[in-house]
Amino acid sequence: MTTRKDVLEAAERIAPYVRDTPLFAADPGEGGCELHFKAEFLQHTGSFKPRGSFNRLLTAREAGELDPRVGVVCASGGNAGLAASYAASALGVPATVFVPATAPAMKVAKLRTLGAEVHQVGEQYAEAFEAAQRHVAETGAAFVHAYDQPAVAAGAGTIALEILRDLPEVTHIVVAVGGGGLFAGIAAVAAEHGVHVIAVEPEKAPTLHEALRAGRPVDVGVSGIAADSLGAKRIGEIAFAGAQQSPITSVLVSDDAIIAARQALWDQRRVVVEHGAATALAGVLSGQSGIGSTDKVAVVLCGANTDPGDLAGGHR
Image (tube, rainbow, N blue to C red; front, side, top):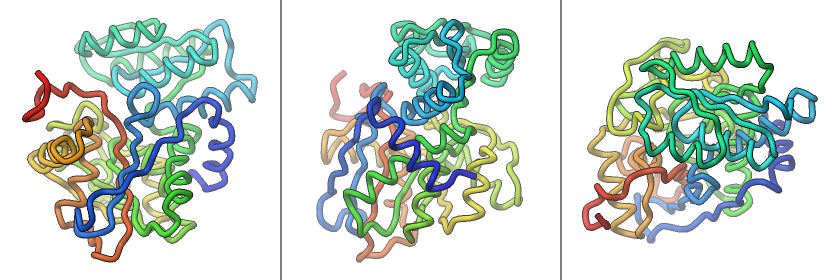
C-alpha cells in the first residue's frame, strides 16, 4: 500500500520535472460548500499522469533499472502513454508505447510527436498490455503501469501535498477513479491529515464501488462518456488496499451528470476538461457526497485531453 512517506519522497524526487499546479476558489456557495479546484489539467501533457511517470522512471534510474539503450515501455493510448513518453524524453531515454489498433489517430500522432515508438496491437487494451509485457521480458525495458504501481501512485499523491499546503483547513478531497492510482496516492496523504476522500466513478465504470461491495477487486463492464480515461475494467490492488485503510465515500454519477459538470466548468469559468475530470465535480453536484455547507472541499480536475468542440457555446 502507498504511504505518506512514499509520497513525500516522490515530491522531492519529481519537483524539478513537474508543475506545481494552482488551487483556485469557486464562487461562494457553489456546490453547497467552500469549493476549490486543483488545476491539474495544467500539468505537462494535459493531465496529472507525469507525476507518476517521472517518479517511476526516476526510482528505476536510482535502482540501476533504467537502461538508457531500451528505456521504458507503457501500454496506453491515452494520458498514461503521453506522460510516460514525455517523462522518457525529458530524461533522455527511449519510450515504446503499445496501443490497440482502435486507438484514435490523433493520440497516436501525439505519442509520436513526443518521440515514442508506437506499436498498435490487437483490438483491446488487454492485448496491448500483453504485448508490452512481452517487450519487457525481451528487452529489459522499465515498465510504467498506467495506475497500479507503487511509484506511480506515490507520484500522483503529490497533488494532495500541494492541496494541503495551499488549503491547510481542507476537509474533503474529491477525485475521479478509474484504475485508482490517483485515488491511492491522495488517500495515503489524506488519511494522516484527517481529510476525507470522496471517490467518484461513472455508473458505467464502477471499478472501486464494485470492489468494495464484493470485498475484492472484480472485473466490471466499462462503457459511457468517460471510458476513454476512466475505463479500467478492474480497480488496482494498490487502490483497493488504500480504500480499505482510509475513510472514503464512494459515489457513482450518471453520464448526464458528468456532461453537465463539464459544461458548467466551461460556462462559469471557461475551463475545458475531459469527461474523466468532470466526473469528480459531478460527484459534488450530485448531492451524494455527504459534504456540508461548512466543509472546505478540493476537487481535483485531473486532465484536459479532450475535444472542446462538443461544449455548447464553445469554439467549433
